[in-house]
Length: 61
Image 1 (cartoon, helix red, strand yellow):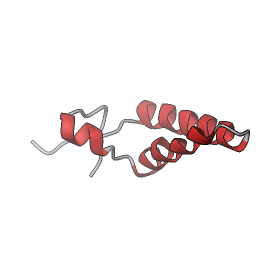
Image 2: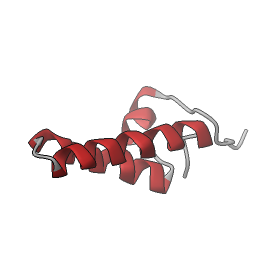
Image 3: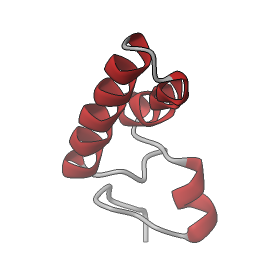
Image 4: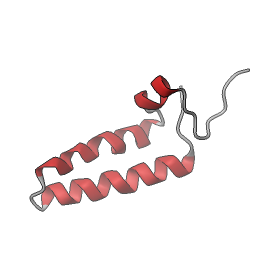
């Protein structure tokens, strides 16, 4: 199951790492960066599934 394309996943990974670095610097809300990091790693975003968004993975027709 996949609903995130490669560019989307790369942007999520960068955002996730940036937020985690901010968390390590004292910004408590930065730990929310784990969410985009995990969704980038697995290639599936639950919010995209609810909204019917697919940014690159092929679907069976």
